[in-house]
Length: 245
Length: 301
Image (cartoon, rainbow over all chains, first blue to last red; front, side, top):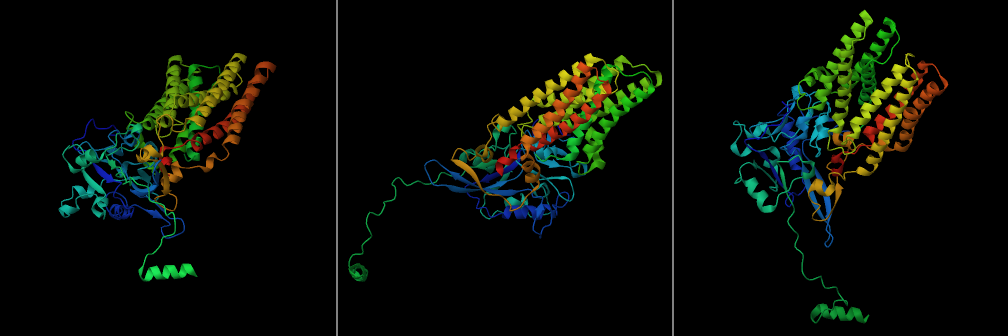
């Protein structure tokens, strides 16, 4: 059914720490690697080694420049994937029931055998979290690695989404937001985790931790008023000798 | 948004078909005899079905399209499918009775007309429901779809030459009125941007509180599904000219044809010229409906 569950038992999702992400794209690559062989149809590419490669990816990293009014610009790497919204518009617009949000843990998924590839769910999502597979012609989306997190056949430390497992900087965290004492809930509380485009009223589950405020020295750097001078010693002699030339 | 030809053809053609069903159901005068009954019904059903068939060319898996009838409780696209089947069944029955007995059942016609209007409304709501596309997210959108559906259906109905001048006056007023509504829609589009939700790259990234946010590097060097589908810009290039073409072919030419009928007693069947002209105008209008609309995801690119 494409009506949304009233509430979900768990609220599984990600915290993404924008202060830590170094923009290495390892999560993007590991996401593609895992999901092309896991849940659903492979994530295809067209012309992958040619001049115009295009393909379906479930996680992409944008890079933004922020310029505060009174400080130099800084760079923020910005990983973006499905936010598993509580009021997911991508679910309610689906005409076939292929797009659904699970009652038990809140994960938003696509049942690919039912998807007609109309693309309306991608239009309904403000975040660009859904991409049509160019070969399979069904809608692909981030599954929160539903085939890893409950998988008893893999070691316990691997039972997190592939992007979280692979992040070398530990910028991505997986957990249950319904539990106020979970790591992700605590982190969100302490660091002032934010929603993306809250005005779209989608109530995203995933939170982003904003970059920590940059240190700003109180004193402006002293500008050199005259050419530096070396006193005494060999350098002093060279300085005096060259100046005398 | 990417203007897909199949979807443009669908909304314009099925709009005209359901518009004609709406008018025939309400009992507008048609010539006596089974030939006119057959032609009018076949045109109405044919245009509606042609539009619906065209919409399936937009699908990745048209063979599963039957599943789209299942989610009418939440999805406008599903409702559109269900309503169109109900409308076509009711009107099909109406047409059959008309063809066999020469009688036009008033009650069945009225119910078909109501469902035809609901179907056009549902088609428009597929787009108008999307908060992510502010240009579409207004009650003016279903109003335009309904108005243009009825206008194009009206010109087709007049072409049968049975209606008197009063009907031509009505058609003239409806068509002119809805082009004014469309003009309002366009003026809103020109100024609305993302102002209604206040979205910008700052809220999209949540970084706006820190400072001015600007995209430094895209996630990939080439295009992707999102940029092709939702950050489509080429179609906007000739927007001004296309708006003029739409207003000329969709508004002015049908108006001149109708004036010729009203003032100079020209035969009703010349309204068919107006019908073909309004279809050209509506294709231009519908192309722009998609091409000029900006999607929230463009804030990330």
